[in-house]
Length: 264
Image (cartoon, rainbow, N blue to C red; front, side, top):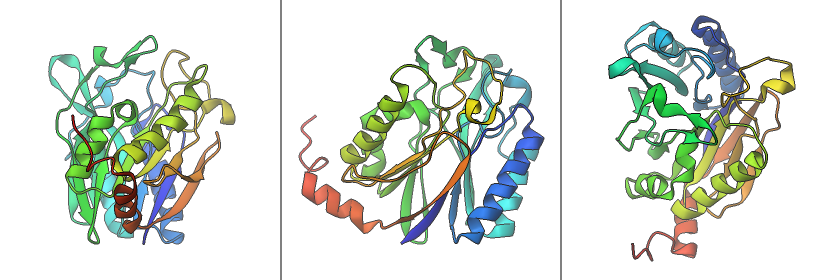
């Protein structure tokens, strides 16, 4: 069993202040026995502000500070940040640090949907990314990636039994329902556990944000490979501690045949 913490927070505009959220979240997660601590997409700085001025490489001050926190508490931390790209854009990067790892996943599918154009300021990634801890292979994906089942199947093909899914989900009519359905569907598609960690709903804490930016709705959701909801947060900031049994993934894949019976 692997104990994983999902820290549903509201990140702000200031990366330095958001480091305090990371430290306090890791401290609480470790007190609860977590080995992996997951924060949302855009933990470094929320959407709705200029991103290029805060973007830093993985060996820059912000990622290095998160790495120091992970090393201090002997955990793996997964948190959303922004790294530089060409042409004045940035990359929407998940930092994976601790447990012998320090690397990034650049979001492949950009949120050019529902009237928002992430690709105006963000360059897409292309590499499917996994990492290993304590003999378990973890895949990672980011927010809008959840609409694309082929990524989750590719992660399963690469050995993942668990997919960590940080997000900053856009609000709107029906968006919570889509979020919940998609998390469960991707778990069924791949046979993986899917542990989604979203930005909390700013309205739940009275935070004013750019109404046109996807700044979160909360409702971080955990589904096993059978599509069962194992845990779910509310709208406000909250930490979920979840015990994940990787063997359930193998059982789900055998039962559903969703990977073995593919024809396309």
